[in-house]
Amino acid sequence: ADEHYKTSFLITNTGNNPLMIYEVKASCGCTVPMWNKNPIAPGASDKIDVTFHPKSEQVGLQNKTVSVITNSSPGVEVLQIKALVNPKK
Image 1 (cartoon, rainbow, N blue to C red):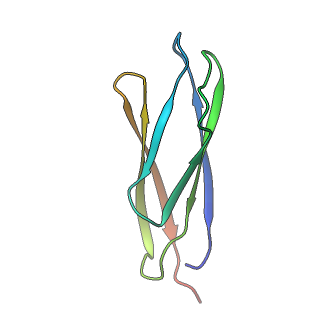
Image 2: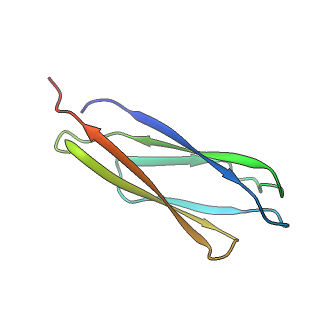
């Protein structure tokens, strides 16, 4: 459990107005999101990169969430990350 694990979520604007991602909040400090702060044009896509760095006591099945706060309705989407972390040998 001494590695960084990365994943990306593709976000597509299916609306008629620019999509603003105001904030991306992780459920814990071991999960760090990165995203482009620019508006996403209608029909365009961008990604949210998430890095998970489990602490030594975080072994076994881990469930983390990332809340994406936007100018769309309902305004908050929750992304889920699941990982099976093996103890460091």
